[in-house]
Image (cartoon, rainbow, N blue to C red):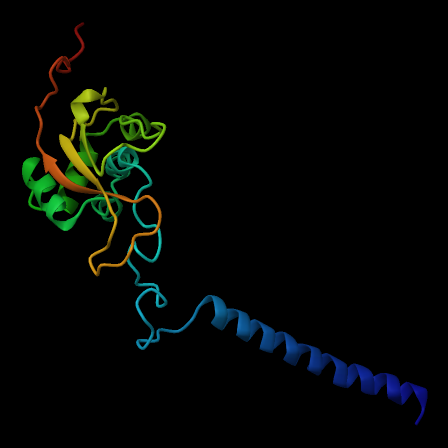
Length: 196
């Protein structure tokens, strides 16, 4: 067989084989990173796990409360309410005069004039873990900046087991209670319009 015919044969057969291998690799990668919905899989494997399977909650109680402020500043009700148990969500909304947690977040976010300041009102970087499994965090113990209101008193609990009884992974804290607290906080001056 002439040399030029072998060369053409390699090019004609080589490229389709290479493209076929690339297509197979791309299909495998797509299926690996974006699996289809398989209802037969257990919940944690199917991505519907709880905080016993993955770390979904906050690593310390102050971070849990700080995230409520942060997500209200950003008007993200799913994220803000996700740091509270279902019962605490209802109590939080009722204590602040709203029908539900999502409505509370939407309305409270309209009061915020400086998102960054409001989001950082509660410090979350306290060193060490609290000695007990329950921490009470009073918003009035901190200077709430950024135009929004103090959100009351939060009860935050360390989670040891999830609803199904599974052992919780790592340090995870959930807001399980809420009390309204004073509005405005004692010692704060109500904002007055500027005088001319």
